[in-house]
Each structure stands twice: as structure tokens, then as C-alpha cells.
Amino acid sequence: MNVSEAIAGAEIDPREARILLAEACGFSQAALAASPEREIPFQVETAFFDLAGKRKAGIPVAYLLGRKEFYGLELSVNPSVLVPRPETELLVDLALEKHPGSVLELGTGSGAIALALKFKSKATKVVAVEADASALLVAKRNAAKLNLELDFRHGRWFEPVEGERFELIVSNPPYVAEGDPHLEALRFEPRAALVAGPDGLDCIRDIVRDAAGHLSPGGWLLLEHGFGQDRTVRDLLAQAGFTSVSTRPDLAGIPRVSGGKR
Image (tube, rainbow, N blue to C red; front, side, top):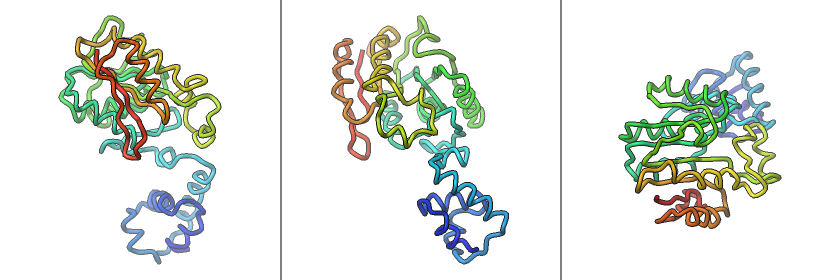
């Protein structure tokens, strides 16, 4: 079997098939594209179709590879953390616009947002909080691999930073509503990192309620949220006393990040 036959026979998205075939055989995707008639050894063919079968069952490509790129950083991922999404890079972009000296990320997961901010910003203090111990271990390993020093804390939301204040608080919290039909496609990712009550806003309510007490005067809170939640999130921010409340869309035009100033 050659490269072209293998990709066609995988019965998954051809782009994903090329990624998995490159992983199985150790060649780059460019090398495979340049040699579609290249014969594949039996051992490679077996490994590739095993990966393709898992992908066909719904397991994310990032979990099969054990890694995912986010904001130019290659991160290790496994089923204890969400797969970092491209749309979340908007949250990093907006955070960098604030030029913070100190940052708190709530619900760090793989560490993607906090690591990107530490890598790209001049913040001297970046604290990343995570309630799940397994996820926190992934984040710590990513920081070590990237040689970036972060202050990781284990606990729920603001519990591990009692009495501390920051110039910027960012979070991509769970925001999917219970019973949302999209959850089926996300069944291999950690449910606790996705679902937040009947309307998906329970975690955002908790964060907005307590954020002001952990922000320096003039500090900002930035939150990622889902489609159709932007108006409610802005209302929550305004009711909590935040000013300059606004929402920014992602590249698909979906209102994605809302924030306000203390």
C-alpha cells in the first residue's frame, strides 16, 4: 500500500489522515505529499490504521499525537485537559494588549493561556490556578518543557490566591450548557472542563462575583464564553461594577471574549 492509498482508505478527513500517517511513519507531511506513490511498510500501515480507527471513533487528533500547538508553543496534551482551540488565542491577544505586570489565569488546564502570556508578555508574575490535579501536572510539565517559570496553584478559582491582587485576570472557564448537543462530539474531553450548569454560565457567574476583590485598581477581567452568551456576560460584568465592558469576536465572527475594568 502506498501513501495515497492509505490516506484514501482511512475514511477520515484527508488532512487529518496525512497528519496521522506522518506520525506513524516518521516522515514530514511535506515529504508524504511529495511522494504519494511511496510504499508504506506493513508495520507503519498497521500503526496508521490503528490511529485512523481511533480518530474515526471520535478521539481528537491532539490526544492521538499527545501534543497540540497553541500561540506558537507546542504543548503536551492528554484526556485530562481540554485540547487548546485556535479561537482561544483571541483571549491571549486581548490580554497582551493590556500590558499587565501581573496575571492570574483561572482554570489553566494544559497551561496554554498562562504559558503563552508568560512567553509573549513582560509580566513578572503569572499565577495559574487549576482544580484538577491531573490537569495541573500536565501544565507543570509543559512549563518545564518550555523552560517557562510560572506559579501554579491547586484549587478552585480564587481559593489559592486569597488576599492577592493582579493587574489582569483571564479565564477560559467551562461554559457549555448541560444537555448541549455539541457535547457528544466532545465526549473524549473532560466534562468538568466543559459543562457549567443549565445555561453554561455557572462558572462565569462565580468568577465575575469574586474577581473585583482580586484585581488592582484599573485591573481587567477577560473571559472566554460561547455563542449567544455575550450579552449575559456583559450584564454580569456591569452588575458587578465593572466599567468599559465590551465583547470581541473571534476570527469566525462569533462573540468570544468579554471583559471589563475594575
